[in-house]
View 1: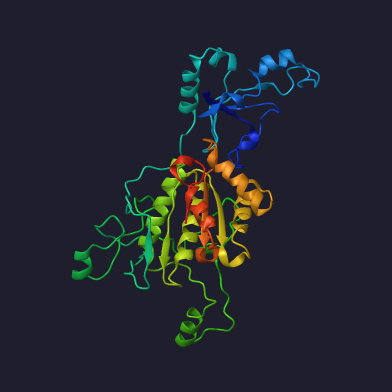
View 2: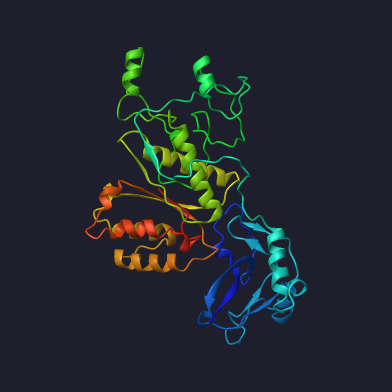
Length: 380
């Protein structure tokens, strides 16, 4: 037998530090609108939920004695919370919003949903290609960037075929809120909510070893293998496709796989990294739900099974053996939770993760299936 459980969340399940409330009580829980199906055997006992006033009246010291039957079974609830968007309802009195009858659950869910943001995603009309497989070729038509004050009558930031053939290449002024996503330029300052595993392109600075006084020296420095470009020219289309798919997966909390192939050196990894940095910037600007990012490079691990350890450490911060990590990940993804924070995984040098049974790649591509909704946002 099973039942649909409506969950409370303690404060330690809320990851967004800047938006997290700091006035929580030691035994306070936040009611959420998230529910899922669980077996009745998972029930550990009955707990009591009450308002802060009722708790103070019953326990004047503010603490429950360890010898009391109410220890670890009595909690305070005075707000609802959406843990994905870190938004709270106004403070309420628990006894006024829920009487204990099953009929009051629907009104409780409505209270939480109406008082919190369901998502931070902004409405948009952009529709990328339905196929999530992007093939990178060495040559792509370039879309030119122009200053913001340049006037034009074309709105979407891309040249039409008629404009391309009958007039000089020119694009419209840059718009802050567009339905398409353009590759960031060097003048954009990227602000991240936490330290990423890589440095976004727009924040990289390469100091020249000598003064570049001639066009030849400038060209030689820019073509050097150590030179890092500040933008991704000719990758605007691919950037938009990858961005839209990852943004949709994070917002919907659904599993998705994106496979990117192409000639070495054409910007596959750089494009995905720049997409992640812009998504991170959107989280910082309160336009997208929070997510976890982990990059697994097949060239940097000695055994393909170590990829399990890297993923589990990114999710839970624990270092375990590959066999233990695989067991924990199977348990994690086979038991989806609506409160789980989406995770974006970039798997680079995928051919280095080949095993005799191909179990590593099969697992990584099977885990984001729809059957484990809200477990993993996207893999690239």
